[in-house]
Length: 166
Image 1 (cartoon, one colour):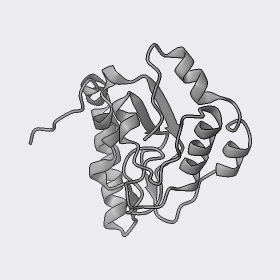
Image 2 (tube, rainbow, N blue to C red):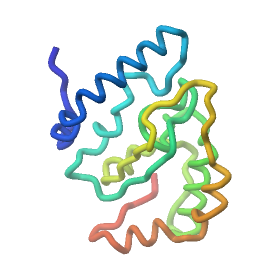
Image 3 (cartoon, rainbow, N blue to C red):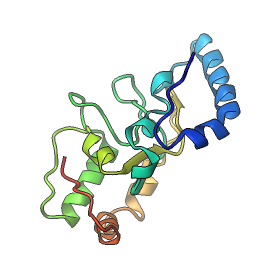
């Protein structure tokens, strides 16, 4: 079977192939024992397909995938249209709105437009178990995130700013 590797990420993916195989084996064993893993295995590396390496301009690092078949999709903070915007993304939208007056808070969490502009939506953990809650949301959103002008600083560093509007 031939695996299509994400554009530009081939060398990286090949360099960790043994580790990925081991991780997939462990995840499959857990799933065989009834553990529910998010996102689905076919979405675990989706982040690398959505933003080719040569296009990466900004990395938005999340903690772990959302829990729930309707939310977890392999991209940090992203939820498909038709699903409620999670609190963490609501906080991001609020911060962008406070910084960039032209930003309009969207009614959805589909961040495809950001990916196409080179925003890599990466979680530090690519998978999570259903029912497992290792989140420290209160710590990270109350200390150091709000009012730091992250999005303005990013745009000031880039030759072509990110259009954060969706």
